[in-house]
Amino acid sequence: MPQKEPVHSQIKDKMRELDARSTKLKPGQYLFGGRGDVWSGTAHIAGEGSCTLCGKPMLSSNWVAIEGVTEVGCPKCIEINNR
Ligand SMILES: [Zn+2]
Image (cartoon, rainbow, N blue to C red):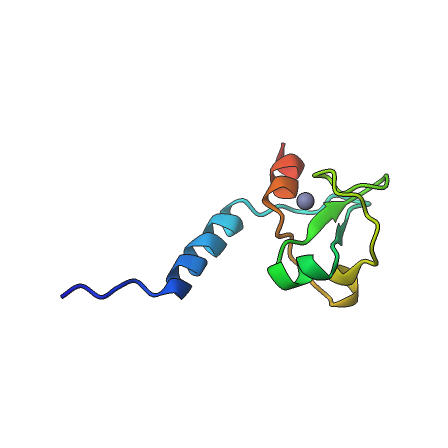
């Protein structure tokens, strides 16, 4: 009888997908995110200006920096940065 695929393997697939789309920060760029982004692993890329690459206004404290998150998690920011 085939075993039901555990949920965490789906998460691994998702992580692999994100790895494949991972991006390198350019000079002057840094990670930005609020508390929610730290929890959900969706750190954004910020550069010049008052928005992240995907257009999120940077109104909160940079919890991503405070918590030491080092990986971009926002698929939109990754996509825009890789263009
Ligand atoms: Zn973003």
